[in-house]
Length: 538
Ligand code: NA7
Image (tube, rainbow, N blue to C red; front, top):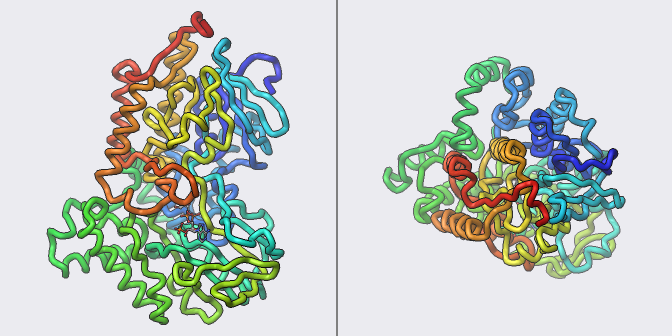
């Protein structure tokens, strides 16, 4: 509640990496800002994803804020890819270092955000019925924050423990001696499966779609590793603003070189590990014949690791080009299927009949299960925004406006919803790039925009419908130039029954996108419309 009855300058919804930086930045401009967060502490996705094996697939020295040079020098990462506890400690450190918690209301879930045209303010109401009012409302609600449980016959009858990787309890479940089932083999499943296999008496993995996974070759970072990278942090950050993550990009096409040279390059990158593998040649995400060469390489690796040929066959992805679903990065994933306590059920061949109180029936066979882990993903990108009842000018509901898919200008604003900003939302590069690079860019753009309004005493900024239509078309065209729409992925909303199939992230390099955002500003916020303070409500 606004304690003194005066509206805040900004309400930020979410206290993950985006919300925390938004608070810090807006506070630094003298904006009265309040953050509302459903969880009991900071961290966002890193607060909730506490499952064993949870790790970022961007290297830790790059998956960190760049806005404070002391912070980036002081913080010591221990591993090449930081695990969830370390990332959460980092986020907590940032909250303390910049004294952020005092403006955050925790355990405060937002249910609605309603624009008042007379006042040019947003009123945000929480589950508990508290109302907060501000000129600006900033959605820092995350791209992957609404977990999705599988709709499988009888699952509600199952009496064992059920956990979703994206809502992992603080008190770690004990799988020792238990028969565990894992549904889902996306990034989360691929990380958690090797860990549970080591703890449980028996593990059954239910795989609907096989995914491509590349070894992480995670390792401890030496102080020399860190010092070397940190010595050039400014250059690295500048480059990251162009390319997202500092991969080793290639200027050659896969089919321009001989088969031997291709194999050598794939093998070299496989030995280095991580998402860098996908950038071996510059046409892998735009040419299917080129992509087939790298997909074949990975399938051959899977067959060389997994001893049982039938299991290896099931683990080989065959329904989407490599990299068109988010590529996974693992530690010992394929090797896990050589364990005697692990069984893979290929749901494409043997679908689940139904769950029951003590387990699951598959192709007429009863499999007893004590604990079920759902690594079944999220209602991505638009899910968390639409989970809130958002109403703009003339009471228009965002859920209605986005009924055929999200519509935004630059991915930051949506026409008819003035002063409502979305961080790393649909229509921006978002999940296709290093999220922190995208977050910092959006927060800076939004903060500059709010400063622009304040300096000119403007009441509102809104996207124009025409400019929004052009942007949506531009985003569609960018995706169509790639192989990305060929997969039934959550990028397209294909994992949610009934969700419109629209390719949501903007498939351009972040450097290109940043220049497009800057051009809009340089042309006087081209495509946006303003109202002056005195005209508010007229
Ligand atoms: P993902 O990538 O959406 O993976 C979810 C997995 O769950 C995927 O294998 C799905 O199969 C499977 N799934 C979903 N519903 C079902 C049902 N009903 N039955 C069987 N299998 C099912 O989510 P993650 O959490 O792994 O990763 C999300 C992102 O988080 C990741 O990209 C990183 O950026 C971090 P499907 O492919 O739909 O056939």
